[in-house]
Length: 294
Ligand code: OGA
Ligand code: MN
Image (cartoon, rainbow, N blue to C red; front, side, top):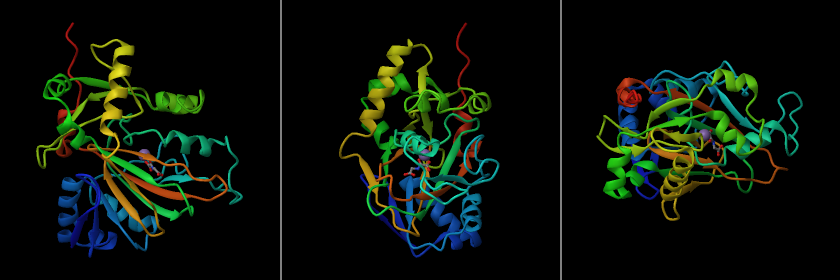
């Protein structure tokens, strides 16, 4: 296996080992798992992806999430990001729910920080790609943690933040999160720092879904959260991937932020994501909020 770093301090392309090797072979899994812990984002090119292969690969890393209420793929391990109408195969019009969802996806985020338990990793495969745009961009919150002034790090080390799916959707359209989504996804709280027990590295844990920090006013927390995301994603610290058919990318939701990039809405884009749930062994044991002092 050959691993070549492409991004600023993270993001690597893996060659010589593919999804099927990892699904079938313990040594291949161990090597890719080690690269995942180190580089946070892994790219595999020219994969003969099927839903089943993607799920078999993903399951190596832990239990799979079930796609959430009112999403395409609900109740299955496959979250579908598409602008093609399932019934007709036609492009959806601007302002359609899937178009608005794509726009919400263009806010910097980590997947499933609004769920309990949250996600360890996401695996995204490109099934239909537009000829321009539609890239996915990543920023390392591990590198951001290292770049933060140590006084701010010690302030954030034990802080707890609140995450709500409806919060990020409302930034795009007021009622984008439906009542069913809101009632099945109540706000959750996690530590603002996720420490990876495999290597001891810490990372900022926050997203467009994050709206409050314990012990701070709402406005002060919103300002700090916006500053931290801007700091983590500052020019020179991100890596943008231009998709080709057959590409698969896996990222560590504990250690990176990501966002989709726009593309012309007269072009089709169809992506399938599987999501691995975090367990205590992934550092989740340290992420539960401390009870606030009375
Ligand atoms: C995701 C996601 C970005 C994209 O699948 O979680 O944010 O570019 N995708 O499709
Ligand atoms: Mn995402």
